[in-house]
Structure formats: C-alpha cells, structure tokens
Length: 227
Image: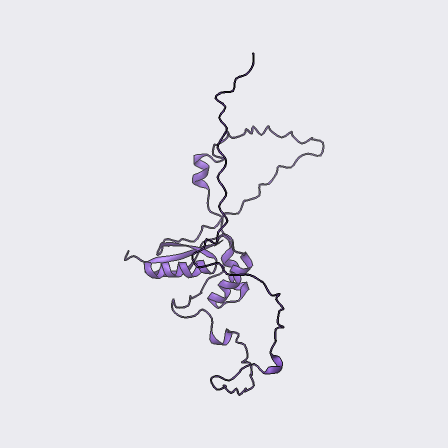
C-alpha cells in the first residue's frame, strides 16, 4: 500500500444506470447540504471533495461515493489545479465606409475538410487550447466518518408500535379431542356389493395365463408347382 497522500476529485460523472436527480439527492444527504449547494459540483469542472488523505481512506471514500452513484477519481494530493481563466475576445473596430462606396466582397474562406480519421486541430492549435473554466462555488464539505450510519437518528422514519390486545389461551390436556362434535365432518358409509370370489391357493401364479404354443409349420418339401 502506498504511503502517499491523495485527493478525491469529482467532475459530475454518475454511475451507469443511475438517475441524476437521485444522485444529487444522495450527495446532498451525504454532505448535509441543500440541493442548491450540490448543483455546482455537476458543472463539469474538477472539484476536490476530500484532500490530503491516505490511500486506504481514499479507497473507502471512493466506495461510499460510488454507492451514492457518484464516480470520483483519486489523484495525488495537490495535483489538481484551478483551470486558467479564459481570455475574453476583444472586438475589432470595423473601418468606416463612405456612403457612396459599396462594401468590399468577402475574401474566399479557403476552407477544406479534414481527412477521415484526422485531427481537427493542428499541433500548434492543440498547444494553445485551454480547458474551459466554469464558475464553481468554493466547496467546503466534509464527509462523514467511514464508520456508522449516514443518517441521523432523528432522520429515520420509524413506524408507531401496533397495539395488540392481550389474549389468554388455555392448553388442553393430552388425549382431549380438540375438535368439537358439531364441527366434525362424518363421512357417509359407501355401500359395496358382495363379491362371490375365492382366493387363489398359496403359491399360485397371479399373472396372466400362459399362451398355448403355436402349432408347427406344415412341411412343404414335397409340394411342386405344375409346369
């Protein structure tokens, strides 16, 4: 296990299958903040939810946030930097034209399509590209300790106890008929005709009677067909 220190960074990503409003509600309950205070976390800009923790604590916090539906990243402590401010474009003054002069036709753009699979920006343009900044309120949240419940006792909804009347029962003595006579179902006797049958002697074959052997085939060796 590493002995370094780490930050827990969140960009607003949620786990697959999760619903964004529900994840925001869980984070609001986890951080003990109003829902409006959670909204800036989902602007897309990286925000450190927890700073300068050991690796074991960082993994535990990451697991707790994943259970709430939020996907975080563990970075080395102090490596998250604020995005640079994006310079505002300066409007250029257009030269004044004389009333009798017609505006000059625009110069040809000279645009061309990038080949399939190519980059839209050149190497120089990629070096100059900066990450867009987004206004994010200062986050001053503290996660709860890793042990115990995330919900306070006064926030748990408990059902009122059900009042049950006292009922006294007696146990019958062994051998006592448990069903009263008026509740017994008496089956009517079934009338069966008298059968005049005899039992087979002991050792008799009770299976089917054996079939008599078939007669032998006639001898046709002396029979000839007439020409």
